[in-house]
Image (cartoon, rainbow, N blue to C red; front, side, top):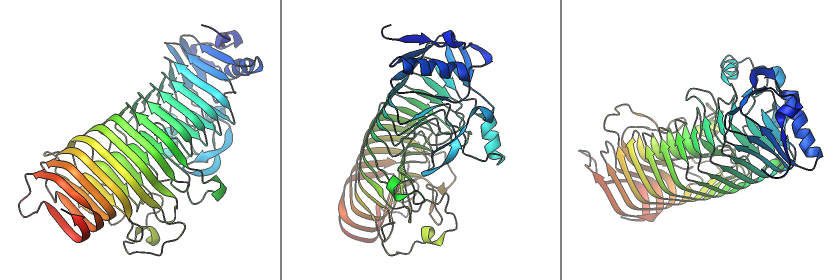
Length: 451
């Protein structure tokens, strides 16, 4: 070891699993900060704690066998002003957090256990006045580094950087029960220059989600989420593997995903937004991914219904006037996908009639449908969407659609269904077997597409 290391036990912390160490841990952080920066060391042991605030130039180092055990009492989580689901509001403080910091790190081979069960139940019972604590959340910070640790049982979102620049999350394991509510894994929120790699994420909601604010947020806070790389990760169980939106008001752009495995996530790559939200999603590249037992490897949904069920502006399938609050999705390129035991659709793209999805390419896909799955369902969350079962590529309201080297086996419905498509090309496409009474490509109002 080199540099300044202070053992948290020097400040009264006890790793016995019962002592409340919040004050001791905070004293250790404050002391390292006063000395100009360094590392707070957690040796093996179980340290119960409430919310603590990190300081600039301070690293938390969790040795193997060290466990930070989140308090189950809301009294240990002060109410702070933060951002939750795209809007600035009062929330319970995260277990580990900070505002306007530089050069902060959480590293090691130890574990952060949020003990979220009591918060999940309180949420289900509608007993909470404010959004639940997150395990780790930094606001307005630069140079955030999280590596090697395991984080489990988060009360809500697990790792949530907001308005941050220069975020590295590497080799982290996140484990939340599949039935735990809104326990997303990693949610960069209006952040720039984010690198997520070598992580294993199994959670009760989306594994990795990129967010950029909602229409209810002040427009000066509509900041983009951009320059994001995600690679070499394994994702399981969540509603979506890698999700963009639905918070898109500040725009999500310049995202590269590669070499990832998705197992049992409802969707693999998921893009979602809706009318009134504004902004949008553009310049996304995905390559070399394997998916197993998903509803669909790719969904793009511009009618996302959660939080707006019954709203006729959101749900109507008729074209409406384009306004500054009409979102856009464009430049989506996804190549090298192998998917097995797909339940509902090989890919599902549903744009707005007044502002279609633009510039989509799907190349070198091999999709095998799940022959044993026998229940039709809605691939995406929206009112009036078709129920599908073993369908191929479904695309509606798209401009410039390029599909090449796309193979589907065990398809049960239309292998390729195109509606309101202008411009593009379908080459080297194959479905086996083609269902009785179906054609390889079903076209409705399709123009200037080479087949």
